[in-house]
Image (cartoon, rainbow, N blue to C red; front, side):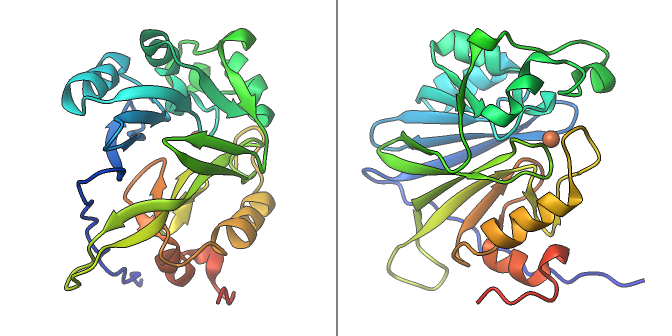
Length: 250
Ligand SMILES: [Fe+2]
């Protein structure tokens, strides 16, 4: 038996100041899905990514803990554990839910979005309750460009969101701040792992290609925020992710 040695990730110390992006995380629901609050520290506008469960708690975090103003709900894909509270959150704040068009059918189908099998109760949305974006689309929130990277493999419409002008922080031992890109990777890329491919719409061949060709080719310093588990970076995944083995991304 052998164990992978994974280096500690440098703690992300987010600079508090004007026009700075901040990210807060809350793991919700039976599968401990990461709900991300990505917000601008100056305007207090906030994008909520994957409101998984416990909608009242998500609303409370936004309103009372972070004091932010949500402007959109983005879904990385349409499995129930990433969108169960999306309706409650979007209704409360009067904002829209966005998901990849290729996962639209899963939003309306409790069997396809796994809610029926996993929980015994149905989670579904009417087609009028959400908007869709496409692979390679581009969104604009918090005064920044959010590039949609279609990454099929976990589901057909699995998507990652890439913000090139991302987080600013001061690296350990440095005196000047640095800005690194940010990637919300959903269930496509996890720290040293990747999402399951054995559900409807999944494909090992597709997730391998998505991760190798579209994700690990991003800048090494990119901070990655997965749908489950801890944060990582593209540099770490190029070295330690099993799908990177034998590939040279430099
Ligand atoms: Fe999933």
